[in-house]
Length: 288
Length: 288
Image (cartoon, rainbow over all chains, first blue to last red; front, side, top):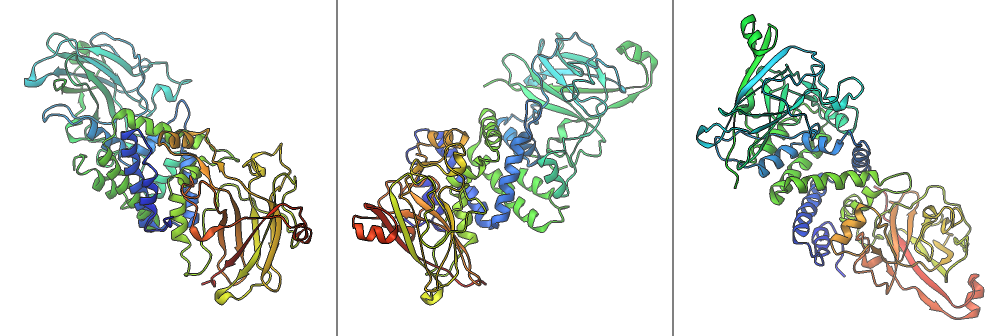
């Protein structure tokens, strides 16, 4: 029998995978076991630290319910979600860059007409978002879908405040017109902290990190025959653009939200002055 | 702003630790983040696989309660617990080797006299365990404590079957005599599976691994002025000695459990023939 020592541990554990018939699972677990053991060797945890880690991992699962996913939050705050996103969404140069989906997307947001307002409660500074969805060579795409969602001006999504916000507040699905154009009304988003009352919040605090995300609007843009993109538009000038708690910001996704004061423009767009406007052209690459 | 890409991800996340005032936490998280990102790069998980991982991690925490610690089980079955044990219990050559504590130790087992029987229910094949506790140079240690616990012949600890087994069944604390000797009665332990009804059981099954541990008795042996040792004695000949689900076996801890048939010996030891006997000398090293 081969003795289990600091030196032999990893090879002994990996040898135990020889009966695994699932090649992919064996590959994944081999990588996980190797690096997990390397962390233990690098860190040399005391038994007390090991038990602290066990308790942290346990508490992270126990914080989860149908409205809260603390493990996704941990993945987000350690940059794992964005790294997975980068790997699974390698796109040609020129296509709109992707970023994290986040935990607050909801299936079945209402289909809304061009120009409609996604703010059901109407609280906040008026905003008009417009632009185009383009294919390669800047070709406008008609009938492309934009699934849009955002937090309210207090920084909460409707699903976080079911007793405060109307259902489907600040959510909607839009289709582009023949010239590839879309337009909708909303309210200006603000920066907000990710939930800090769980193990991940306590970890961030111990690490000297703030929990804030810069103001943003979420989009999933899709069109038949093209690769869909899950992304955000970020508000230029936000103080947290350089230090997003979940590492979601990409320079190409930062957009000026211009303050407009013209009553004439406001009337034309269905808002009252002063209001903000933002414009962005999404570029999709062809499906494989 | 530095773009978050597959190449820059790790350095960007690590840079965010610069405000951490806890040097040890920063060191630990640096190692964890580096290797976690390396696993993601090696494995290139799809979004579906990433979500499967999130769900596995969540379920592992949610399986835990005051009687069940699924995260310790995961640590055990991936060899992490034994590796931490190896690192935190580096011992001089000759000292009794350590192995995992396991999840079933209970504080406050009864103090019992030399020769007492730890089997309260009395079910199983009679067993007498004896030996000595020695210091360096084989010096017998008087008054050393042996905290002993084991599963019953069906493979369950008392705390797993509170409605079936009497409290403190198969648990006891003994002290060595002037010549360093200890002796107690029990029943022969058997091999048993670790709990398989949770995420860890399903993972082992998917990996083609069995969940069994070879038959063993747990010990924590301690004496003032010496390093305590947490260990097991394993039954020689057990079919799972080479493939313990938690990697706990060390060759030096495998002991013959001899079948004895002499009525005279049995009467002397307070059992009835046939019975098993096992003998082991624990060797403690001096405290630092």
